[in-house]
Length: 338
Image 1 (tube, rainbow, N blue to C red):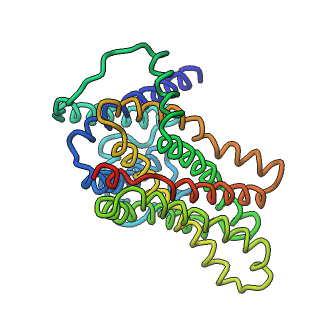
Image 2: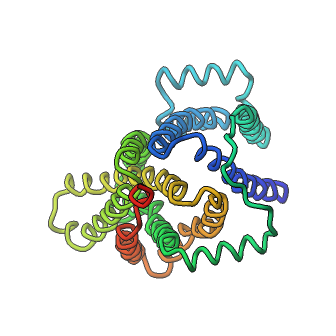
């Protein structure tokens, strides 16, 4: 267990460190009007591959009986390939070891491919400085740069809105008494809407800028908690079951839709408005400050245990409204730089 926790911490720290040079190279090689489609295509392909990876994991762990979606020609093909490679049929903990080994292989291949990416020289390179100086500089940016500060708090509000995401399924199952198989279908809608919306968001960013996507996702983010509050407060007694099912399904679809747009725009907006010479500092400091708020679903679980699920959705709605206010007041970098 200790080795696993240490390895997990090392993986997350490494990913955080690697994100800064990755985004720096992307910002140098991909023009601002093409970054939306770049990241949208990246997430689209990653989503499709993620579905395939889920199949492989299910086969290696021998979870066919627990996965109703494990059927059809595509799954049979994946199962045959996994079988020929001798990756299935292993007992615990060897089966998990196989999964970790596969992950390490693909990460190594990705790292090797990235080594061949060319990096154009920077127009201006900042000198090296101590970590404490970088921290002070970052805090100074947060105080002096109004747009940077608004963007940070908009991201925080988004995280507190998103803390309710895992509990829409809980609400549907426990309160609405919707069957587990139907919730599984809703989750598929969530994943599908997230994957296929990447192209929409990418094109919108490239054509109209990043602020409109940040604002649109903020506005749409208020709809799911409003729907649940309305269902639990009035609609559940005055509306037919079919309408309620459509409303619940729409919360999953909208959450998947806006999550993709927000994840892309959080990256592209920061890359576009940060000064070139200080872009690594802007990106690294923002990601470091935002990282603790990734744990907001844990806070959501605590809120449900103490105050109930209805309170959680009210809190999510309040942060969604604050997110709308902050997002609409952000600057559009293309207007500033024009």
